[in-house]
Amino acid sequence: MKFSSFVRFASFGIKTIVFRKKKPILGTVIITDRCNLKCKHCSVNNITAIVHPYEKVKGEMQQLYDMGVRILFFCGGETFLWKDGDKTLRDLVIEAKKMGFLIVNVVTNGTFPIDLPEADLILLSVDGDREKHNEIRGETYDLIMKNIENATADNICFYMAINQINKGTIRDVCEKARDMKNVRAVSFNFHTPYPDTRELALSKEEKAACCEVITQMMKEGAPIFNLKSAFPYLIENKFPTPCHQCVVIEDGKVSVCGRCIEVEGLCNECGYFFVAEYTLLFRGNVKIIFEMLKTYLKYI
Ligand code: SF4
Ligand code: SF4
Image (tube, rainbow, N blue to C red; front, side, top):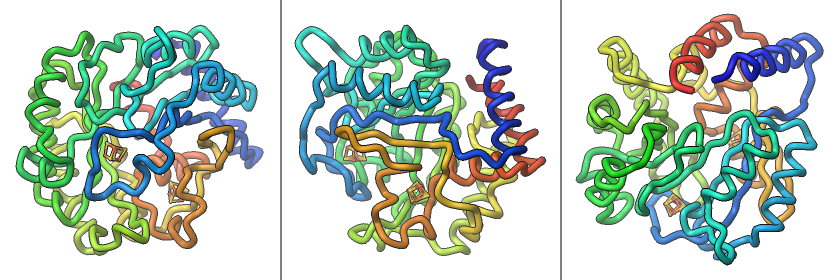
């Protein structure tokens, strides 16, 4: 991260904490909900299957920028399916940088060739070892690993949603992240139980056991892009929700925190680590502030 960006984020953080502001800094544009997969835990693929046109996406990016957002995520569906004429996902990333976003990240399922050197981070879903990943995401593991090996930059971060199927494979994913040359780290979430996937949710005890494994892997030097100080809050689901510093825009509609905000009661069972980390940070939790500084400066 550039020093000027760091100063900008630090000043935003201080103002938010001191004046209890609710301005956003992190924004997500859903560029399509079309997806080539049908993962077991997913409730958001192919609802409309619309690929939003370039001018519309550009307008939404500008709208987020004008709201004060400086960390931008492109999300799907599957982002690499996005295309408009000769414009590709890579053009969107380049455009976002030109627009002035300080960090631009992309979320993908990794099943397409990865050529996005301009992105700061590519969050790529790996949901366990080969067996468990394939059980959740179809027979995609080997293709994804090949795409990672052939990627044109080392800006990949694994993204794992821990659920009833893959809860025993945290160590495997950490070791893969440590050993693959184009992978910088792994970031975890717990499954957020939408009404149609409740059976995949973890109990408090299971979450605690997962956090123990993650903590052990941190001690062993695995590159983990999460904050240990947030674990007790995540286990108990005792962090403030929603995150007012995060916004999502899809088809012109802006939601605070996530699209999931519309699902009644879901925030009380939120499994997104970033929500716990950000809301605790902006409440001025000192341990989180120091751990976030250390972790973010290491991986971005
Ligand atoms: S790749 Fe992502 S959007 Fe597609 S089905 Fe899986 S979780 Fe859903
Ligand atoms: S469940 Fe609620 S708190 Fe969690 S990401 Fe969705 S909107 Fe945010």
